[in-house]
Image: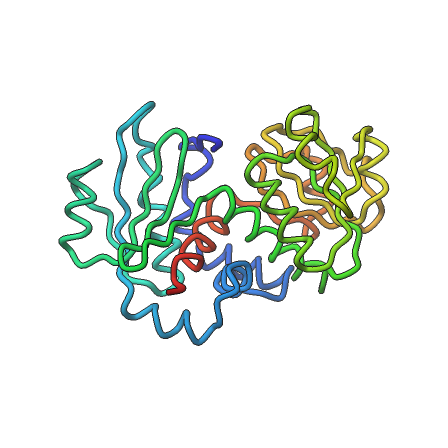
Length: 271
């Protein structure tokens, strides 16, 4: 899991309305709709559970420790989705005990290696990597107005990229992968229907739809892309250069936390 920084999260809790309006403008879907689609949860289930499923976000001090604004930002996303949420005063095991005692049904917790949501009633667990991959594919489907039969290039086959590949295949997309890690490439060499690309520059210009799921920043220029290219960019930091971001404007989706957190919540709602 990529470790976020204070800079990545600064002010996100105060910009949820603006952020959601931007998603709706470019994808035709709200954050709640994107997350529900990614988790395959009916809207009526979300509405029914939102009034009764309390969420507790537990600060975890293990490893490199707390990012001060992390738990508050997670709470702002959960509350924007109209679920009651609280950040526990206690940390670690004490925080888990506090959240459970407060009547929370769902816990969010993150350390240096894992960020999960846990449904205490059902035992369902959602991992942020999988949720982020699924969520950004749902957002890209909105941006593309459908992905069935479309050729989609995925950059990176870590947890997020692998989840994106699985989601794209379920949607009927024709998936291609560019990855530099031989071990990760090996996992997909014999998977039917997945094209392996070996040259990044050539691949970028051949695909109109791209999921950028790498930990690299500022390596894609607007001139590297096909005309009219549309991108879902869950990678941290963002792979597009500042100039490319300006030129692409409403043709790419990127956030450090919101889509992943929203999808995690939806994934653990199902009984």
